[in-house]
Image (cartoon, helix red, strand yellow):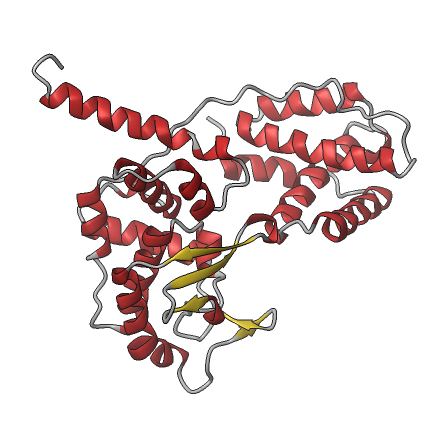
Length: 322
């Protein structure tokens, strides 16, 4: 089975981007950022996808990226499928290509859109994997809160579960994003959309302890490092923002300490657990949508399937005719 490392190696073996392709990609991304306010992670993903196509196209001796036809795009998608890329990854690529060629058409640089008749791959409907409430309790209790780093980790885990944050939202949360007096968190989500999320008493307690007892110790004499004009709320021992990868590793380590299979746990799993547990305790979908920062209610509705499975399990276990 092809692994991500194998696929990266094959892509790295392709020729470099041609100057015209690189200029076209840069122009597209600049306009996408200016017009749509796309997040940096989205722009980076678009760049990887377009450069991958441009390099593959160069190897084939085909036309420049801006002049590619539908047959070339179809061949590239077929090549990626043969390399082991998932349907979800190819669906994201097609979304990127539609944005790129759509922009060329709008600006009069093409008269046709080669993606118009390309169908996205059918995606399997994957239900979110949520931990049980007892597993969440064990995970939250795993950090050693006697140490500054452990107190930080406890506050991060509590905050992620209490507010249903994405891992990118958690690690980039500025110190000005928390209002403990009002008990709310100001979160910058996908597409630079801001939302307010209520804080529970438990998460407020651990966040206050982190701020009072651990953050200054971690920052040391140099203080917390500022990036993009802001200071991250959660920092490492060098005063730098904690990375997504570092937090991912922490979640896996604490899962093992809590007696949970680390393969079943991820930072995003805490967000899924937040949503599932709220629904199981009677929350309505509209409120959940607002707290999760979903732009469409249909995205939130997938959690009703998880909650329905939970209710069916309870019925089968406890009802006389279950």
